[in-house]
Length: 208
Image (tube, rainbow, N blue to C red; front, side, top):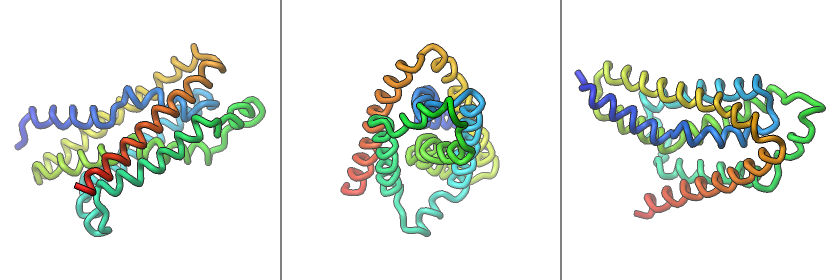
């Protein structure tokens, strides 16, 4: 039977790796132009998808990567490159047109689904770091009790992520149009830096 200290350590590891507080402003920038209900739908869907992905890698992550011949470092590089594309859109106004037309048309279900899957669920929530942590933590104890406990820890962290997404509505309420535009571009720069760090970390590990 595992000790409670191991469970606390697992929670701390996943919380720091996923960083719910840091994801909230990024979520706000990605969902710029959406109303409260649409943000709720995106956030909920993203967290459910992330929970599914994390659970799969918790159970058979290393086996999946080994079977496909993929290292976690290559996964990190690929995720970083894809994330950089999203950051580029945010900085150079790829979402400006959607924002301007929000008053004239509704955000489609496809847009909500697409943003929830990428880049929110993957790679921002269930990214290379979180997947690596899940694989490493699951390997510490092969017992069924530990695997169930880890699933509970992952679910708890993702619940905090969802609550952080809901809180972003309060931020949006006080920003206004100009504030949202400034924050979207600022967060795009930060997201670009994060994506470059993903690539650098992955390449450094591969070269080492």
